[in-house]
Image (cartoon, rainbow, N blue to C red; front, side, top):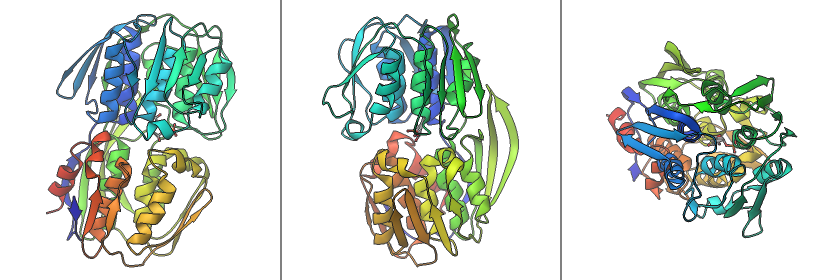
Length: 425
Ligand code: S3P
């Protein structure tokens, strides 16, 4: 896939459903009683991995376009899977399902692709083991494949070293089945979709500051869910609209939950012209249409509590900072090293290859904006966010930018290149 300098991006786009919310809706729908109807479910490979895992555990899940119908069988209604559960490239599937499997009366093995087999799983193995779970990394290196021997659990009060919604959610899901109260405290508040959706399904969840608490309750009840557009997918059009001169883009029905909207705050901080229109709230998840116009950007510092609210958008923000005047400093973002690829290392290497002035630091990077970018071959390392970031960056560079492994965008945004092309004419 190749990209050259754009003369301006104009028009409207409707991004696919939120990845985090899609995963959670099938998981909770499967362990609730009765039917759950999910509209605008993300048809990306990660969310299809979640569907296939629950089908393997006896749940009937029907897909009609981007609507998904889950026939839940209650908290204890899953069946032992015949064979290994394949989570593909999805960290969310692997870590959240672990919390559910830890409490079942059967054993299961979770695996995934080469990237998943390198990602740290001790962060969920440790708290789930404290709850009484039996989980083993079969390779002994703290990564998948994981063998999970389900059984009775007790509540814990866990303080996590990382602000990770995957860790928090795994523990809360296990807490649904535990004796007594379970809580998770994190250094900064991570995305709270699990807390919102668990409450919506009838669980007893509360939050105070960076602590989420779940208390044992009866069964969950199936629900109707409308999945908002994914702000992490919208991020490519937000930044493209700001970076590419002569652009005006309207992005419809994007989820703007405050635990996910850091990109809006940072873009505005950098001088970005973004207007929120038509604000709404369904199932506790706010949405808005985003109107984005080309802007003169300047550098900023991105650190601390805002980091978890834009963690997946940092590659795109780093590339955008190359177009901004002055220096942008990204700190407290060491988590980028353990995503689908080492995104700190990959971003610095690829931006440098295009002529940008970027330095990697221990937990982030420093970008000195203004150096002219030229096209290059970008090896995406099969990381969807890297591929999409450089498709957009290629629109601001001289010459041709070619993305290697471009099809990996199917993980979170199957129609990405088509949607980008429709705006670029
Ligand atoms: C996610 C949480 C984040 C994010 C990932 C999705 C989730 O990961 O990067 O894409 O759905 O809970 P961490 O929990 O590892 O920060």
